[in-house]
Image (cartoon, rainbow, N blue to C red; front, side):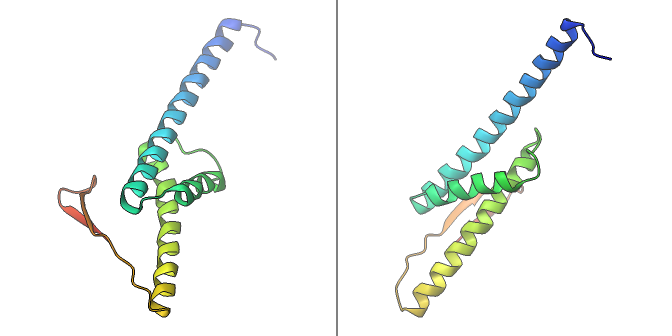
Length: 118
């Protein structure tokens, strides 16, 4: 039976709108943080930004409101970046091309010690 109480439908739609806004905020925050970090370290983030969006599209559904769920999309995009860089390094070493590597020490959000990223 169809509920004709428009007040309850308004409440449901308001709740849904609130959830959608929260998910949009989480997505924008995770995506922006990822692309800024890649740009800062490597100077150009367009392929990585596309990877992040592709990984989001490959998921069965949208991640929830927890940061760790959105972080899985970022980790998958980082895996693509790692593969791309590994292939580039292997190609460079096989053709005797010199590549400058940048070592960055950043605090990890998961532990008190610092992490070295190569």
